[in-house]
Length: 121
Image (cartoon, rainbow, N blue to C red):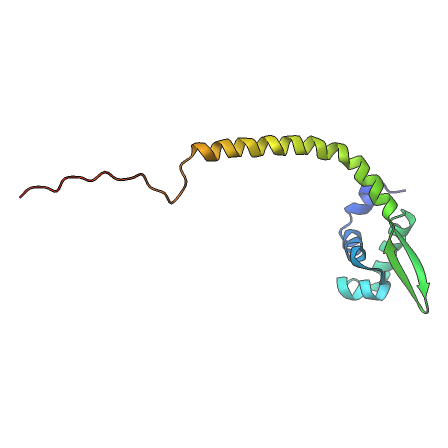
């Protein structure tokens, strides 16, 4: 069994998930939008379904796929601890850059020139 990160590391799977964020899609719709062969789309959807990221329903002759929120909520909860870590560091970087910006003259502005006396002839 692949880990969540191995599943999501595959670019085609991420592209499929991105499509499903906006609405449910059939295999054919995903195939057309991503320009991936139908067997490849079906293979990736099977992996995503088995991992719990998507579910499908039957609508007449086609199967529609949609996201399941639970795995994403679990990942979000796990990632929250890292967001706090990075947030602290990003805030410190922002404060540092603000201090640097205040101590550096603004581009485009020149120091006021003092008038020089005209040479006498």
